[in-house]
Image (cartoon, rainbow, N blue to C red):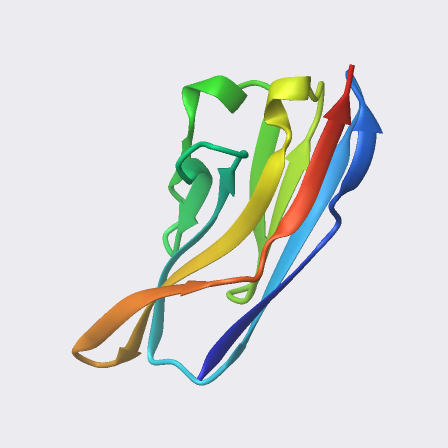
Length: 119
């Protein structure tokens, strides 16, 4: 069983910065990608940024130039969020797309961490 533990959320003023961390633990066959998604009240969950096992990175247009995703080894991913805006307020979820066995893959989610940006 794979678990993701997130940390680093909180309350910050507009223009400020936060850094989210996510650590994966447990047994799995191979990592495909890790990343961050967010869900604001009344809205659907949306992609923020992902990084795959080869290091390729994808960002949502709304965060390009402000957020940076990075990895530390195969089990830890960070999201550095700068120039935060009130519209960045959401619950941020860590995601890991994994091969649990050689032919069985799926998504594992963290419990989420609240990010609130005040104006």
